[in-house]
Amino acid sequence: MSAAAERISLAPAAVKRRRTGGFWHRAARHVMRDKVALVCAIVLLAIALSAIFAPWIAPADPYKTSMLRCLLPPLSPKYLLGTDELGRDMLTRLLYGGRVSLSMGIAPVILATIVGGALGVTAGYFGRHINMAIMRVVNVFYAFPSVLLAVAMAGVLGSGIVNSLISLTLVFIPPIARVAESVTTQVRNQDYVEAARATGASAGRIIVQHVLANVMGPIVTYASSLVSIAIIISSGLSFLGLGAAPPLADWGLMLNTLRQAIYVAPVNAVLPGVMIFAASVSFNLLSDSLRSAMDVRA
Image (cartoon, rainbow, N blue to C red):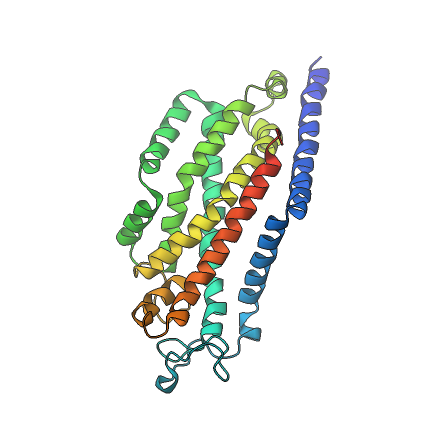
């Protein structure tokens, strides 16, 4: 009887796993059919590839200064996008800056998804006192605005890339944990989970084989919408002097150092902001497309 019950419990899990695979396949097809999302994906791919291969495609040294070539306008000889306040090539600085800005946008979200997802799934599956203990702590951090919390934590930890990474990770753990807890609470009472419990399967096995396969879609979709926010907040921290430190190339730090040249060389001063805008909007629109692909009503 137990063997039959086990087969009953495993069958829905296999069906759910197939549905999960179908979800990602459907999401990919939806993005390919969505022209706006496809353009955003191409833009992000171009930014990512240019950042990865910056040492090979950059036309100059990102740290080489020249006081004789300060704030040259775009389309100057040998300087396609001009130079910054220290005579450094803007195109090169933007390419190298993409490495830091994209990393600070993606890495904290990945870390927060792992930690927040684990906390949310644990709270949602076990419920009661464990849920109360975890979610009370999460709600304390969730009560503060993301930007204010990031600035406060970065101020306590100090400036630097590592401290900014820790600050952003802590900022995004609460919202991801809330989403994970919500979807896990809905899944834990499904028939296939109850059947798995009836066979005597351990909580860890049920979570890995039955729960995660059904909650990863909503968690990852929501987490993808946080990447654009992470890029903006990390750039803001660098702009305030709490993130990347000179002479490191970072879009937010470049905005800070070029802010005094806004009246002298406005195009040069706004170029880092254009890159931040393009990357954040592309991530945002792409996540919207992924969210609409997940909507069963669509």
